[in-house]
Image (tube, rainbow, N blue to C red; front, side):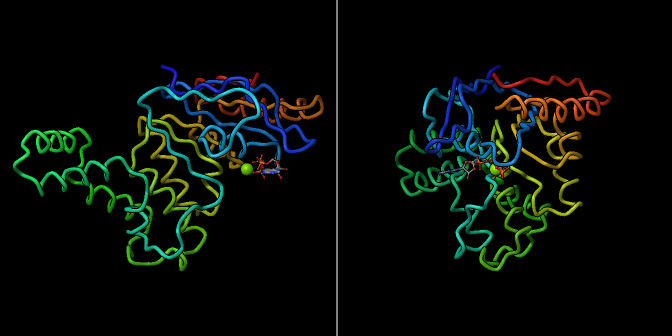
Length: 254
Ligand SMILES: Nc1ncnc2c1ncn2[C@@H]1O[C@H](COP(=O)(O)OP(=O)(O)OP(=O)(O)O)[C@@H](O)[C@H]1O
Ligand SMILES: [Mg+2]
């Protein structure tokens, strides 16, 4: 099942063309590593996929009903909030369902609205939301929920950004350098989390070990002839290693 299609997108900043007419798709259960040189436009593509930036041409189509989450390269947290407040300030479907249920509780006479809110709680598995988010915070070693973001280290901020995303249980995860600032133990936890869960991934990473353990497909962005050769070599090397363990497909972005 196709979750997302990138169709003929191009982007330039002034005179500089970052990429031209790029197309690719992301299907359910694919775990795709996206490889391209530093500064070649990976973050820009991810921002376009997530609607944070506009392409000059083309479009990105997300399948209706698919929930996508984005872990950006820089953190987007609010400095004044605590760890726990950051969870509640995030755009989370389950929180909206809980909010609707709490509102319905205030008007118990409206039985229809109450039933709808109650069913929503069931569907989203929202009754034990507190346990769910606390479990993930514990696993990501963010036990002190009252700490403010401004007092967190780079690693803790990255872990909090990850926690916010994982708590939301998205269908499709877009990750820009997910292992930056993480220690080995956390990287290993994330590897096993992504391998076990029924999650679809599209990620940029320079972490070759992480890529090899988590991804089952690589796509490479090709811009110039020289870059094309460099890229092909990198992709081929990684592919040879991966092939031993997984069924791997290497695609070149059109
Ligand atoms: N809003 C902007 N205005 C002008 N130039 C920009 C803008 N955003 C990005 N760029 C430039 O476009 C190029 C690609 O940036 P981008 O961050 O997408 O690359 P990247 O492949 O993610 O890089 P890295 O490997 O460092 O993460 C860079 O040279 C950057 O300076
Ligand atoms: Mg980048």
